[in-house]
Length: 222
Image (cartoon, rainbow, N blue to C red; front, side, top):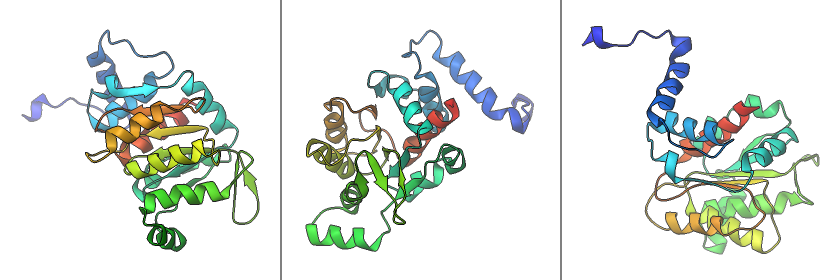
């Protein structure tokens, strides 16, 4: 068995992985500009279904890259996704990663309003959002928001409501919750949004790791 192992230097493992992914995709046609996103999702999950179930709004890669270059920050619905995003690379462009799930005011708001913490997190993001920017606690302002949702469909539903209420206008929504209850339906809601860039992992598959890797694929494209 040992003699069947491919000899690859540690520094070349990721490169070789992407070569294998490209080989196995073969003649599969991907939307120009989205190939790095699709391939990194496959690299993260070893699941080639992402070549078919990722849905991209028009020119989403270009719009997302522009937002990041202009200092956009990322709001996630899990600490796991936050941990997985390359914060050092994002900081080069002035952005930060936020996850409000552990905040006491979020827990209290969720209890009072009878919602999930994930939905309350979206409300907190909206409360900090002013004139296309999110206001930090120290009063400084930064550019718009990217939402990377990999766990909670209730976060997507609340995002959808806040957008339609005119309280948020995200630079990008990454919709990748995983699971069975309201997951598919919440993603389909995002697909109906107009003038909001999105990357949606259609169907049941996704996860915090997928949300993070989509963010990273965009960062590495820069």
